[in-house]
Amino acid sequence: MSSSKDRQEHLPLVAILGRPNVGKSSLFNRLIGRRRAIVTDEPGITRDRLYGLATWQGKSFEVVDTGGFMPDEPESGERATMAQEILRQARVAIDAATTLVLVVDACSGPTPLDADLARLLLRTGKPAIVAANKVDTERLAAAALAFHELGIQPVIPLSAEHGLGVDALLDELTRNLKAAEATAVPVALNVAIIGRPNVGKSTLLNRLVGSERAIVLPEPGTTRDAVDTLLPVDAGWPHQGRGWWRLIDTAGIRRKGKTKLLAEKLSVVMARRHLERADVAVLLLDATEGVTKQDAAIGGYAFESGRSLVLAVNKWDAVEKDSHSMAAWTKAVRQRLKFLDYAPLVFISALTGQRLAKLRQLVAEAAAARERQVGDAELKQFLRELPLDRATVPGGRPVHVFGLKQVATAPPTFLLNANLSKLHFGLERFLTNQLREHFGFTAAPIRLRLGRGPLRRRRSSARGGRRRLDRKGRAG
Image 1 (spheres, rainbow, N blue to C red):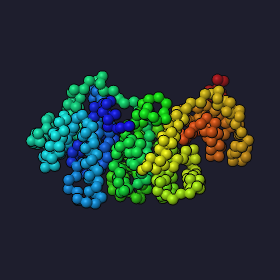
Image 2 (cartoon, helix red, strand yellow):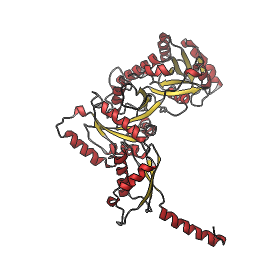
Image 3 (cartoon, rainbow, N blue to C red):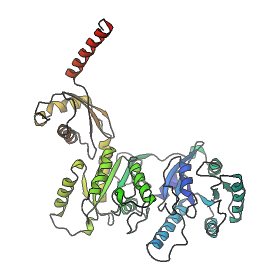
Image 4 (tube, rainbow, N blue to C red):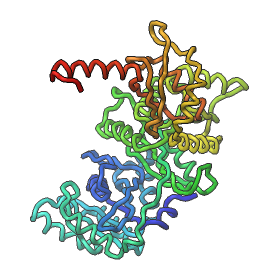
């Protein structure tokens, strides 16, 4: 399995490069037409490679945003390691790209680092373009001409923030593309990897992909943007049909009080937004730390957004175990995450690859169950066999169910007609458990909506008829 190679075979890849804080992420967002990358005034926000799809006049290509080159970092320590990782990630993007875009800051003019980067891109022999960003006035448009000295042609003045000149860049990027050649990659399933900082989300992504796709460091909070990776699902993966899975490695979600930098606060907001792009979420738990309140909060985000969920206890290789360890852990998870009792549980090691085949299988089963549609005849039979004598509501009165119909999938949603004014928690839990057990809704949160039973409908109609007769003085 590969990432950049498979991607390049389907769509041309444009790599956006440059030093920190020149507007690479702003340009990336502008090209793909949505806010995919975090944009702030703080340099060094983008660290991993971020991919997105751009379409211009019927021609499509893929764009990759890279971290800013940071030459002034210290020669040792964690920040130096981060700078080396960002540089390595950028080189991977350069190797896979068909066209390179060097983003520079027209306000500051050419810098020595711009010249170094230009020489690096010229040595690749690949087509390159200079995007002179932050050109918001005619004076700056003239200043952009100074970037011709970098030796890369053409130089296109633009403002990514305001969209000025971006059409000229798109014209240049798509000049030699044919609309027939640019076909979008079919994505069968979106899978988000979620969890607290430093639980191993990026390590799991890299292990699934089979390459170092995301930056992995001991420092928590390394990932700030969500990192998307496409995987072919017909390469021995347990999935019906062919297509692609999009893996979304989200930033670690911290408690609000623990986020200090603006970038960290934005990463939490973006992580929750990217979770909503997913069909199935894999919630990573840390075997070395146990289940925490934050794990429950993150699982709550997945439940509230209607994502199917698989629980994966990571770092299982790093804990001392006996024959009872897995059973004890399972009991602890089920006690502390009672509202996620529908989510299957697997014990893995992203570092060694332990039980990742089982994880993939559970994700595939969750995807299939999420789209399952139950017919009316099956639901009628289900109601006939339903042990309603076990169902309870406040007051102890009997429950009469008149009908049940599935009205939506993803997540499975059912309309219940019963002699109830509201759906009580105990009855809702009983019915959802019965539906999940009977029809195999693996990992899916089931939604129940209360309709109006025949008896209530007749009474309501009768009351309405009398009101019309009194008001209008005639029947009907």
